[in-house]
Length: 266
Length: 267
Image 1 (spheres, helix red, strand yellow):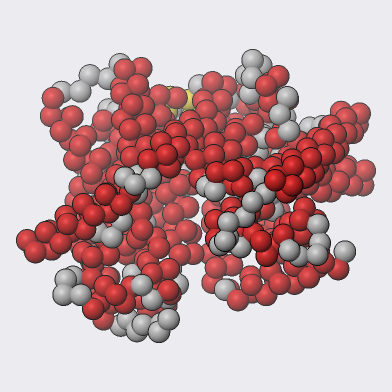
Image 2 (cartoon, rainbow over the protein chains, first blue to last red):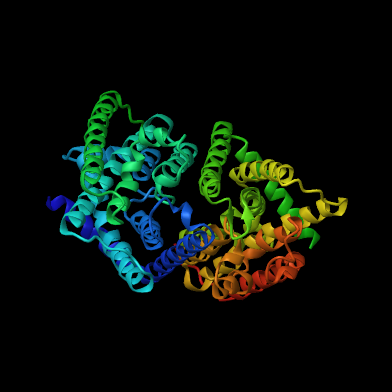
């Protein structure tokens, strides 16, 4: 466990080195929050009946939470970009030679960034958002616990997805083209920006068959009280299944790649 | 001026030849750009299939708005994407090479690279604009097609000039990347896909005056879609070429101001 905190400490120092960056990133986060806040207000003025039975505050909370969770559940930086850089630069050997399991090492590294981003870019803007905009909060301890559990599982699911995606770099050296496809798919299919109940019915089965709705939709819907009681626990259960399934697949594929891996002199 | 042009064109030719070495990357990259934008459009489609309009803008009008942005952004990206990296050039010391040669550093810097990914943006944007034109049943007089090209280029210049302006800050502070990223939020996050008239006065003022990204797509689209009388300040639709030229002048002035104070990082 101490391995996990070592990386956190390291990223914390990195972050604190550039204070201006912190303020600028905070600024752009708040701008994004304001934009979605306006968007849903405008849409509510136009057609309140089209919200699918949720209130304006619930919808705004859902949308703001999507942006805020996006600061710890990141796509543009993560284990996949790390693997790609290391493979390209020929530095992956130094990771492979370390006396710890590669998957665990990657997880610890990602955990470090996540904790630091949580303290810098999720909690402070959440607090600001709470005072600036009218938000709904979890009403019971069970709901809050389910939300925290759901976020932790979301993080693991995204980590395994990113890890599997990053393994492509071992075959192709470059991820750029695939990366755009991956981004677009997660943006569209995770419910981060638009809640899944607003999607046309014809698309829903397709979205439900993918792990991505577990990453954003589940925690956001739990926090806003859209998923409650048995539905809530069922969604958390589905997350757990995806998490375990993806973990096994990641282990299996990594095992095969590691066995046949040939590293050219970097 | 003529010398500068010759230097620029020679450098661009070399840059294009370098890029052509990697053809597989090229196709995969273009394909990726298509998918990425299709994803954003799909999100808009989901929203608008539910709500029909967004502050009086229909789905195809938003498609037009978005692709007008993408058109300018794409042209900018082909020729000037590396402006964002000025910070890296300075930190790594590669910028100092340019200062030792007998040609304008600005021209050398701008001509350094071309980026094929922007080409995907331009192709997709042209295709989607045509689709929008047909679906909206637009019927432009002949001169409007010419005007479209003018504002399309102006759109690229607006974005290029604003990034150059902000990137030049790194001559003084050595850091500018985070500043550019934060400013781009007004471009990617605000004007790109939302009609500016849905926001409050403050934000409208910022994207019109302080960081006038709205001249990339929102204002020029008003005339092209025949909406200039329906929104406040619609007359600004005529001003994007002038705004582009003013910004370009400011950016060059800022570059000259910065480079005079530039001290190498010594790396």
